[in-house]
Amino acid sequence: MNRFEEMLDNVRASQPLVHCITNYVTVNDCANILLACGASPIMADDEAEVEDIISICSALDINIGTLNGRTVSSMLKAGAKARSLDRPVILDPVGAGASQLRTSTAIRLVSEIAPDVIRGNISEIKTLADGCGNTNGVDADIRDSISEENLAESVDFMKSLSGKLNAVIAVTGAIDIVADNEKAYVIRNGHQMLSRITGSGCMLSALTTAFCAANPASLAEASAAAVAMMGLCGELAHEKTLECGGGTGSFRAYLIDEASLMDGSKLEGGMKIEIR
Image (tube, rainbow, N blue to C red; front, side, top):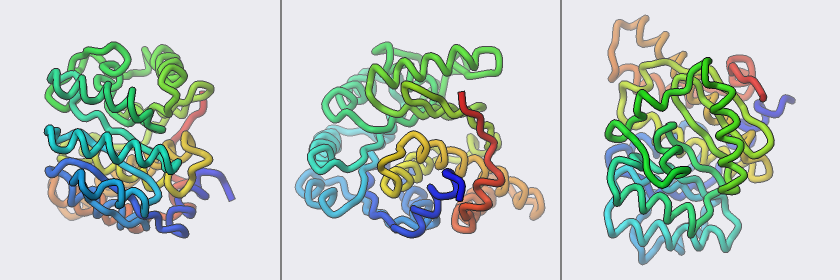
């Protein structure tokens, strides 16, 4: 069995319980993508219970999409507990660079929790690296886009940042890069319709958390498999959307459908991945 095929099969077999402190715009989609891939979600963000919840879960997904003062303390508390229990922690620094609150909170979470994986767009990741940045709301700034022309430079940047933060760095966009300090996975799966629905990035962070929960000894590979799966599901969902003459609403439903229908063999056969 190939390694990436094994990653999804491990999720299906272990059915990890995933604790999500995520944003209320996309919480339902995050729960559904976890169920579709074979995991189980718990969406708990009250400070009084987050330590108990992470204690029964296999991994923690922290997403700052709808950031507020109440959930910041919950994130820090859950993250500290997850660290003490050696549970994988995935951070999605949504909109870092768009406001001082988001930027300072994302940097604080990285510093105090030391997440195992940081998944975001290139502008958010550059903000964590530099302490300030440019975003278009919660979307990447066009000036930061990864292209074939700057791919080698971007790969080197991700590897360096991974070593600096001691975390797997997963950057998604037109070209996706998942890197640790030694190697990078360049992934070319996906479709532009993924950027036209709310929550595709949040769903990917939840999916990445499930893959890391089921493959804790191979976090970079697990993260790459999750990114490739989301992109492949987007490609397949777009095909079905065209067939039915649908739009973004149909695409969103088909995206979750494709996640539920995905298996290790289909993932291995459809992923477009290069190791650098």
